[in-house]
Amino acid sequence: QVQLVESGGGLVQAGGSLRLSCAASGSIFRSNNRMGWYRQAPGKQRELVASITTSGSTNYEDRVTGRFTISRDNARNTVYLQMNSLKPEDTAVYYCTLLLFATSHDYWGQGTQVTVSS
Image (tube, rainbow, N blue to C red; front, side, top):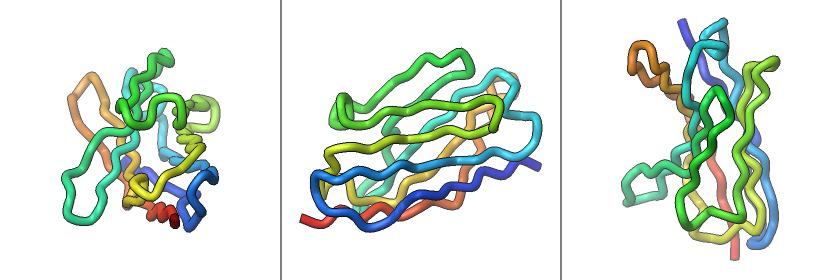
């Protein structure tokens, strides 16, 4: 069974930084996949913030480009989201996901709250 465990959320002032981590259990991390971070703010739809494939190809939502960086450590089965220059509109619950290409199955973490105060 695959488990994704997020950490690193919290409260930060506008302009500050946070780094989210997501640790994946099992050997699935080494299968061809795409890891991603979604977020959902109150009253809004969940949106993809950033993603990274096994080979390291990345993609970012326009509003975070230049401020957020996604990376992965395949040896540690972990994906990271470095968030700089945070804005109050970045406030949301952030979810880690793993899309396994072989099965098109999506795995989700439990979410971690990020709150940016103005």
